[in-house]
Length: 431
Image 1: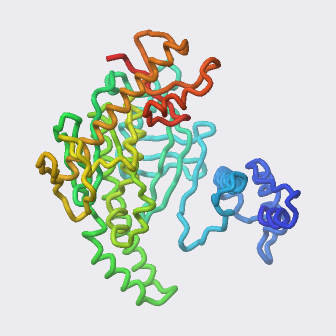
Image 2: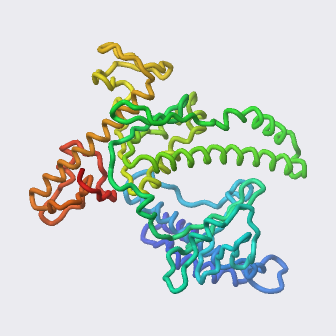
Image 3: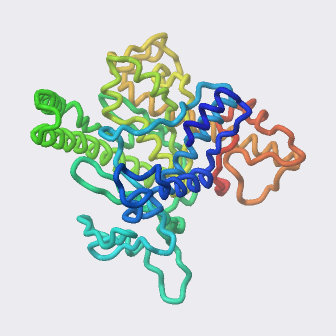
């Protein structure tokens, strides 16, 4: 139905494509009971197995389809390349997953199992103690946490259930009381992350496990074995499962390291400076693409940002064109060139020699502290103009424009601020 409407829209732009989730759900419900959906020789019209699957599986899939079509048309309106029109998944290579909504408290977490609608009680391997404690509601009190969605995903030979939970913010004792001097993070390949402050003290140095590099030989061996098997045979299916288990193992090791490191950084530092790296452009380099993908720079930055937001932390993005590696943190001299093969920074002006990642982390921390001070000065300027009071609390960056201030964002950019217009900023105490 959707493809036919889109073909008619391409021939005649005046034809509307009904892509809202209500239109798609109503069209699918009418089709699944029609004779067109029945197999050849079926006794009754419609899908024979439609009652064996909960309706939420179809509804959530059609909701995702509606969002994909909307992004496609929005990209065309903006004039950019945007996203292509949705296509059918390939059964042999598509991600096996489905999502369920917790409509009437149908999703429940028990001691050693989880209850899903239509599927019943499913035993789980991991402990559910912390999850049940989070969802527990004291007698006579309103529910503080609620399961919104349950997503069932298959990875290799294992099934996983991911729960989307709406809960209360963290306890004030687990959040940062105020914004401290920034801790700069420099990401690299030989050393995954170096954390240092503006005073020149190294706070953390972490090395990535690089699971793909250490298991690349085994990965190639299993891939060759799979290519030698006959298509459709049981031996091929057995080899495919072995290869899938190895891929899942590599992904789990990488994700475990990134989660542990990002959680530690977000807990121990209230102000974090991260470089805005152009990772998509770096992946075009064939010599570095595999190594960059193996350390997950992008996933680490994403996790640091949302985990810092949970704890009322502040994350400042360092401009990607800021020469953090080429600038001497002692005399501010900028060298002309610094190739990746040169791991030691040598300043020709003050004769300083130090690790290049350590030098870049210090410069990132100083960049964040200076940007924070410029944002506070700009905020004080706006307060003088009448767009806010001089109370004890102040907004670190820039608050949304009021009626009097027409374009305060332009003033912040003129002062060197690096904050985004639609971002949500942190309210902290004045130092």
